[in-house]
Image (tube, rainbow, N blue to C red; front, side, top):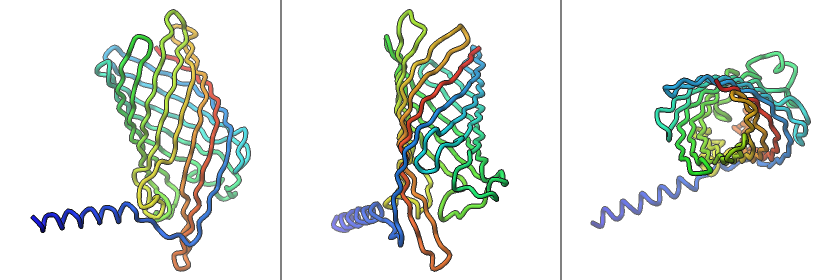
Length: 268
């Protein structure tokens, strides 16, 4: 009995020591930025009666203001995804995204000429559960996302294959007799495999909090427009390990992003 109690106490102490573990960085600084962004996009969906869906989408992001790197073309996403909705309350999505990163003030001419520096790949899988009330549909989406890069990186500083968990809760509101559908959602993005030097207090961390409000306007039987505003709180931990004695530098980067967007959707 006493032996079991002692083992329990030792286990609790070990867990506490792990959870409070943190690296001692030789250099540490914090950088905060603010940005305003314009987003435009288009999505085309083919749906079948058996619950299958095939979609292709293109999104372009432009920073009209960025206090850290100045205004520029930010990035583009080209996405191909497959969806399956076996019942009214649950749907599954599997997709691939080609990401093209825009230039910023940190790029050198050498990096500009190497496509590996500005091409990224993403695959994702998500499960969405929803329930419809009289005037609203509430849903929860859990998405596992893998971001891949093919350029050379220091794996002690950052991942070549970065895993994230994206948790989104939202609601679409029904306006009887009107071709508009207001909506709102909130999403948390959490790292799953950040390198140990990059972890916060020895743990994975929330890298982004996003909230979006908008309205979808059905302009015809097959076409609709989506107007929205998004606020993003982004947080990153940039690690630099010098060759001399493994000198570790940490830069905590916080970005507050305001985005205005419009997207065209075609469903048939």
